[in-house]
Image (cartoon, rainbow, N blue to C red; front, side, top):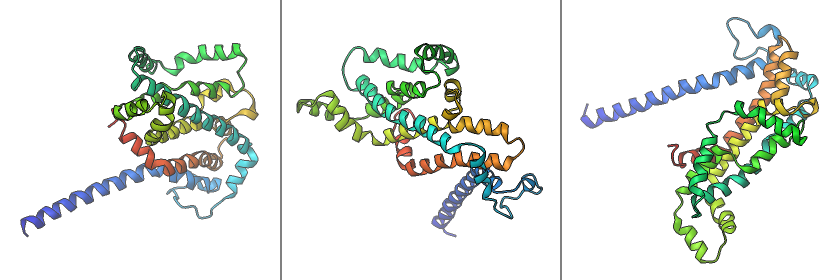
Length: 282
């Protein structure tokens, strides 16, 4: 065997080894989701059979219909969409404003405010939940969606950091040229910054939506009426109500999980681009 042929075989062997490892780890990460969907389509007697059945003998689609009969899942879905979608718009409006102002506008406060913003990331949410609840209670907003929606319109430290790192990499000449042409800062923000930051904005939108969809602590703290519960609370109450009916619990869990997976795959191109091109996260 020639030297070139041996090098080619070694290269392809190494490549196949990496592909094999990726397939193994991919299956390990995908297996819990596959098992959840499989269990959601079984009857009660087939859930704990040994050896485990990955593919049910009979697909019981009526488990999903039973979930709809047990809990008002459509009402929970409506409430969840409110607390997941509205914060997306709030963050996409406020975060670029803050990030642009402390990155591309020359003023003394920018160098002071950014470290303070990063400092707030070090404070656990558990430390502030009692003062925040007390504040919202005094304002009369407990048992409303306002405590879950309004803070997003003032930005979040982590998303401001992501946005700042992306904007920091944009050339100053673009903004200087726009200012020379008479464009104001708001015009530059909406006509230049937003189009150039599409990948990181999509990343922020996906992260905010997923956080709102999965949030349990916030709705559990501020929402008190069953008609205002989100899917996370509804799934928690369903856990206690169905007792040992694991097939129904897995059906409810699948309905809460699959939409997130679909959204991620739809926006994964921009999501991965936004993560890979953000300085400091490489």
